[in-house]
Length: 223
Image (cartoon, rainbow, N blue to C red):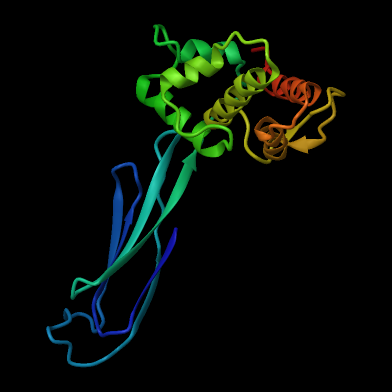
C-alpha cells in the first residue's frame, strides 16, 4: 500500500501503516539526514514523501487500514480504507450449511472469531444488510417464510458467506440461467440480485428468479 505525506514546512516525517489486525509498519524520513530536525527548523524545505509497505493478513476478515503522516512538530493527518481478505475455500456451501454454522450449537467448522470475520465481510459487501450479529444471521438463514423476499435474503447471505470464505470472487464466471454456460460474473450477478431484493416494486416472479440464480451458486458443489 502506497502512502504519501506532504508538509509545507521543514520537518522530519513519520509515516505509519496500521493494518487493522494489530500489526503496523512505519517509516521515518529525515529532512536533513542523518541529523534530526531541530526546533525551530533552520530552513524551509517543503516535504513530499511517498513510500510503500506490504502486509499479509492471516485470515479472512474485514479490516480497517489507517495511514498516518506526522511531522516532528506534532502536526498530522490520516486516511483510512477498508480491506477485505477472503478465505481459500474451494467448495461452495448451501444455506443449510451456513445456518448450522450460526445456530449457536456445536460442532462448528469455524471458531467464533472466524464466524464473526466471515459475517463482517458478507455484511460489508452487501447492499441488503447492515452489520449483522450471529443471531441476526441465523434468523435470516433459518427463516421459514415462504415469501419470495425472505427466500432471496437467505440465499444472498449464503452467497456472500461463500464469497467471504473464498468459494467465489467478484470476477468468478457464473451460470445465471441454468444452461451450464457461464454468462456473467459473480459480482455482477450479486449486484443484480440485490437490486431486485431492494426494489419494493419487484414482482414475485422477479424475486423467485433471483432465488434460482443464487441457489445455483450455493449448491454448485453439492451443498
